[in-house]
Amino acid sequence: MKNLMAAVEANALTELVPPEPSLVEFERLISMRDGHQSAIKIHRPASKPLSGSPLIVLLYGGDFVAGSKDQLTGTARGLVRQFGAVVVNFSYRMGSEHKWPIPSNDAWDSVKWIAEHAAELGADPRQGFVVGGLSAGARSSLAVANLALLEELRVLIAGLWLGIPALMDERNVLEKYKEYLISREQNAYATTLDADALAASRELNEWDVDSPLHFPVLFRDQVPLLSFPSTYFQVCGADPVRDDALIYYEMLKEAWVKTRVDFYPGCAWALGFHAGNRG
Image 1: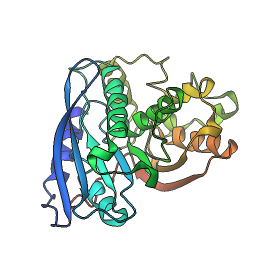
Image 2: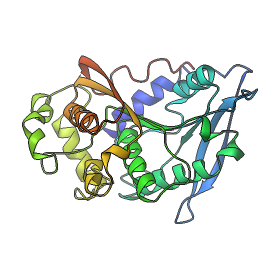
Image 3: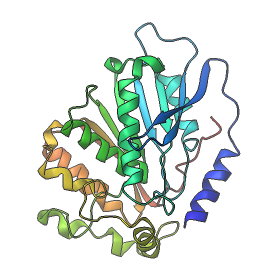
Image 4: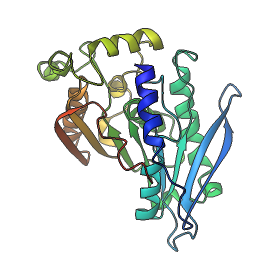
């Protein structure tokens, strides 16, 4: 599975071309809680908008075992062009070399640092602050959003993008939604991601399945859903974790959180999500 994900990303990155002169890209290192130096990649307009640049933070996918800060470069460039935003992609340490919760801790440490140094990066979060990602990146984005509310992050996250996230399982889904959590069985033999791959991921990463950092739905007893930012979901119909997103979407709707979902019937997990990476 790890090799497959790495191959998919490598193929997508071959399509990358240099950015046009109106875009600036650079990298720098930031410190994690244990002193590890982690790389971030900044994308921003060469000329800052008069109103200031919103801040967008993107977390790549790869089931915490594959991926890189370059994965969402095409997405980042598009957001710079469309919104004049400062977009930051960051690295996090992955399994099996770095066991959980190191990847989750790196995600929270990185988002905190980026938010606290937004002006230094050229962004003004008062114009908007969005956090999001794909798969593992979406899972971490939701965990980060909860931690930001729990720890009262100085900069308010205004929006979330959750692309094909895994957020719960049959042990922690709310009772009234249990009958709707059926995608793991329905899509057990799906292409790109199946039941065997999910099991292998659990073994490789050695997660604590009772931690909200792993299953963000468990934050529900600590963070009221009505305090959540606007949230956008992308869901693949042939994804074993399809129903995680659909159920969480319903939970947020019931809490009167502004939400939107785009559903792709018959689409396997992550299929086509690296399209457009030519940048």
